[in-house]
Length: 186
Length: 346
Image 1 (cartoon, rainbow over the protein chains, first blue to last red):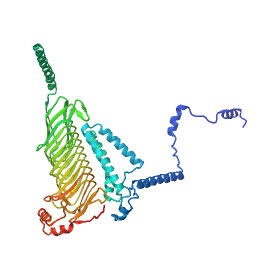
Image 2: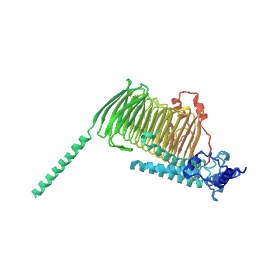
Image 3: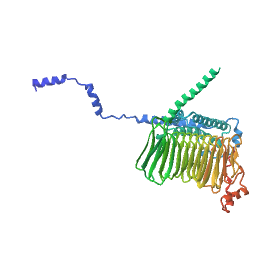
Image 4: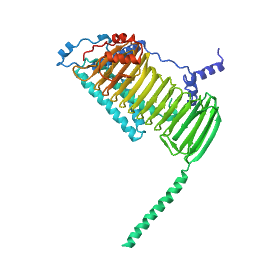
């Protein structure tokens, strides 16, 4: 109990520092061996984020539907009143306008950028033809939009309206596909 | 005065001699050299050909061998003929090639086993095929594609014209940007897509057809399979479908500002308040579907032997139909079958 050697050892141990950080060169190796602790996400926060995302999506969809639907002008109530229901409302497409959600717009912009890049590789005559055709599509789109504004219940115009923006996307895709480097095309 | 005149005459001669001195070596540099390569090949294998510029002529023969002849200019480094398994590859290697052009032109005459299928990649090189029974897949930028294909056809060009006969094709897919498309024969499934090229097709019985153009006019002669489906779209190009026999199908034709002309069926309904017209009716048993959609292009539907547009079915026309389809008992059915199913009011 009264061993002077033992006392001295205790004293020595007591003098040692409580914490000793490992030398810097050891830390990367230690860090690699440490098990990765998964961050726990608060389920309430997760549910709130999901709810918010759903609300945003629903709002965007509603906005797109309302925005895409042709507006009925005050001068046309009689016209609409005389229009027989060509199709039950349930079978009509909710919106025929080009989607405006962020992912679609981003994809479309990317495709258009690619189209412009590939277009620059073509000879001027072909390029001019493609530009002319793009102008034809856009003109048709504008003409149909105007006609639809004055005759919003026309199913023909609605369908033509829808197919016109498809035409532009199809043209982009067509040009991009046709101008892929020869050996990489599938 | 005469001294000045003779000086001018001499300078003219000097110019011609200098020009000749420049042109002769240049033409020697570009003188063509003969090519002759051959390799044993699978009689039903796949032959892959790659050429940037010039022309490729492919002919089928009864030997199990691929033979490459022809000539190439100095820009062509070599013509590799290699193979592995069922595939034989003919690759024209140029000294300096860039993606959309080349300094090396090769005119190849390639003999392949008749039952081979072909996979051809070209840039500005023209392509011609005959006597090959297998499928054809060809891609070109500005080169023309022509000849007769024995099997299915898949062709894509930017500005190159496609002019093919494909009597045995059951599947046809042709895409061009500004190249014209002319195809004779073939049925089953057809997918034709052009931006501004003119399309002329003479097809056999079609079960599934899709024809699309922006400004190119399309004229398609076809027989509709009993439950066939045809979809045709254009923006400003005209679309004409000429059936070889009265099709039993449901028709839906619509146009924004183009004319709809039909030599059978009812008259199209025009929008009451603005542009836009539609023709929708069912003919016969109506298992098939035919849909045409144009913006400013005209749409035309007709049957071989019937020429009057926008007329209701008359006794005379039905007599003509009877000549196309010699079932006398069908006349009454046709008469009952032609009915308007869409009284859309525009």
